[in-house]
Image 1 (cartoon, rainbow, N blue to C red):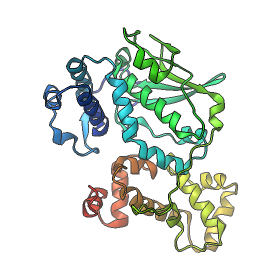
Image 2 (cartoon, rainbow, N blue to C red; image 1 turned 120 degrees about the vertical axis):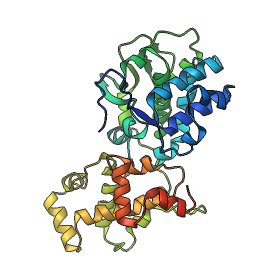
Image 3 (cartoon, rainbow, N blue to C red; image 1 turned 120 degrees about the horizontal axis):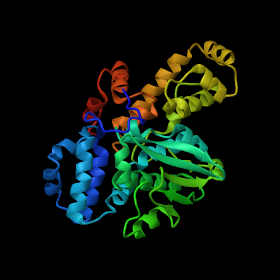
Image 4 (cartoon, helix red, strand yellow; image 1 turned 30 degrees about the horizontal axis):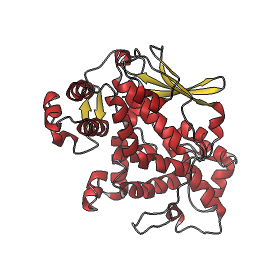
Length: 347
């Protein structure tokens, strides 16, 4: 069950994936902290963090922030950790660029923080006159008085947004819920000079016109490294039949929304559901069969990339969680995603 962002208090069962914890630990090391001492202070073993799919209690994650701040005397630790989280998650953003055409498309399909990071909060999109706001809504409202999570999420979000589009898309102004710190130099460098402190909600402002900005389209033709191109999704189909290309591009683009329906795909293709069903029937297939085939092919493609986690793959394929994806993958390939990676030498 996904936690509600209206809860306000902290649940002892909440947890985060190891990936953001590893980003924090890497930032700590770069700032002079001793890894073993930080782990000891939070009662974590390095083996707990070796698999990015492992989960760590939110309480432990927050304790690590405090331990790192003490060890490094660096209140900006969240900004550094956010930058590293952005960099380590770049591959997911590149895949998103293959299924989104504009910044608006990306916001509509934006990965959920709850699904990708864990039980810490969500990013919400709001319209505000000439701006759009990306609001950080923590599950535990008390964390808003601290810099840690707010700085992580705002710095990572600012860097993601400004790297997606063909043209720059910088933060125009920002707001944070914590009081103004003594040293704001790095904060202003990452979020801009117009930052409101002790605000009601932490958020980033971008130009409303930026919604139309095109995303940089990635070239996924077969490379020396053996990357599987998107064109392989159409193997076995008549190359002169543009229906397959339109259908599969729509399915791939809409999969991250979850609960994919034939009506949604038909609308994306600008045809009626009945027309789409008729075209599929004439070609001896069904909507469900095509979605299943595309998911099975994409799953292997994503899992063949060691920089894309199983959690990322589950999101890109539209599954509610990793467990649902694992069940489906077993039905296609008679093994779990982690087993597939181990046998392929990618684990």
